Every structure is written in C-alpha cells, then in structure tokens.
Length: 305
Image (cartoon, rainbow, N blue to C red):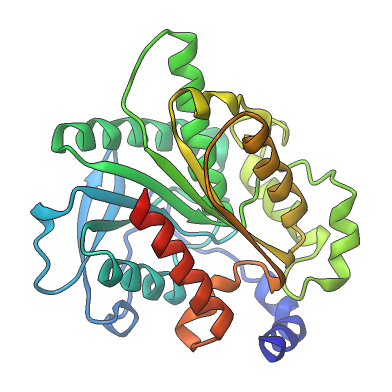
C-alpha cells in the first residue's frame, strides 16, 4: 500500500486534471465484461435516471429481499470506474441475499447540484416506494462524492417529511466510504493532513466541491449533509455506517459527521484506517491486503443491515 501511495502521489496532478466529457443527464454505462467478474448489468430507468442491477449468474433475484443502491464517487464529475464495477460485483457474489444496483446520477459540470439534486431526490422517493411494494430493505452506499449524495438525499428527504408530517418509506441504512460531508472545506485540520494525503489536496477538494455546489452556498444542507438535521436519522431508526482514512484530507469532516451521528443517537458501525489514503478500498481488485479487509468489513456490516 505504501508503494501504491507513492505512485499515486507522483501522478496525482494527471489524475486530478482529467476533464469530464459526457452528455447531459444520467449517463448510460457500458463497462467491459472483464470489470464485472462474470456478472452482468441489467439496465432500468427510474425518473430518467439509469439504474444498473449487478446480476450474478444463476442468482434468483426474486429471492433477494435486500437492495443496495451504490453511488460511485468521482468528484461528482466522473462515471463509475473499473474498480467500482469490480467491487460491486464482489458484493453481489458475497451477498446472495441482496441485489446490488449502481445509480448513474447526473454529473457536473453539465448537471451540478442546483439542477441535479431535486432530480436525484425524486428518483430516491420513487425507488423507496418501489422497494416498499416489493418488500425490500434498502441500503444506500457510496464512496467520496457518492457518499455525499447518499447522505444528502436521505437527510433532505427526512427533513421534508418532518416538515410535512409525513411517513414516507426510507432506506434502513447508509454506508459512507470516505465521505465528503462539508463542502465549505473550512476545517483547519484539512491543512494538517494535506502533507500525508497522496491523492487529494486542499485545492483539489475545493475545486471539486465548487463544481458540484455551483451557485449554491457550499454550506447548503443539500450539499453539505453535516449541516442538515442528523437527529432525523435516529428518529426513523436509519443507521449510518462508514469508513474514514488517516491520509485523507476529507477525513476530518467525515470524523466530525461520524461523531455528530453518535451524539444524536444514530446507530452505526465505523472504522478508521490511520495509514490509508482516500477511498483505499477501491484498490481491492489489485489484491492489496488492507483494501480486501476493508471490503470484507463492509460486506459483513451490509449483511447485518
């Protein structure tokens, strides 16, 4: 893992300067079969957002009573990577009781939060109604910017329900991997961790945050879930699980969010890997021990969800 971090640091300028080129709206995904580890993708569309069910051969989807909707990270600007597909395929194989579904959310810069958030929230409502009808327990999971969307959508839906005295169906849990929880990037500890982070820098995370929040205030609760009413999760019994990493400039805000959850009585399991980089779990396809352990931890927690 130390060697991987060394190489990532050498190439991070190239990695961070990738220009997102994609169409408007929810992007159609077409990964190579080699990235699916023998699984296949079944596409469906909900509220004009493409959903991709990761299907393992010989699996009886009708028997699965749990669904995990995965929101892949990518600075709110990139579609899922090959590592995302490989990790989701492993989850599908390791959890026969669950269906893994990848959500292709609208992306910046074409569709930043001011145009995309209400769209994603509408799809979330529709997916939860669909799951309730099917008798499915739903977990939202995601890494980095994807974890930000998962947390933000659930919290905002809860806030709307509370304001309108409604009891709509919701996910039973959220799994947040190295989440981005505060887009203001004002936490002083970010600068303290920056020299240890081989992938992200303060400037990079400010730029990606700006790409997503666009004309909205970065402190807006819809893009910075740390500013929403976290107590609503406890009221509905929604658990929040997560992973943070010591060599990740996003971890200080992630840890504050984790601690806020504990203060508000939100149940969940969290683990902190002190010497790991941002989203190190995605190096699992390369056989790295720490990433394999993190993936196994995540699968075990999701099994109990």
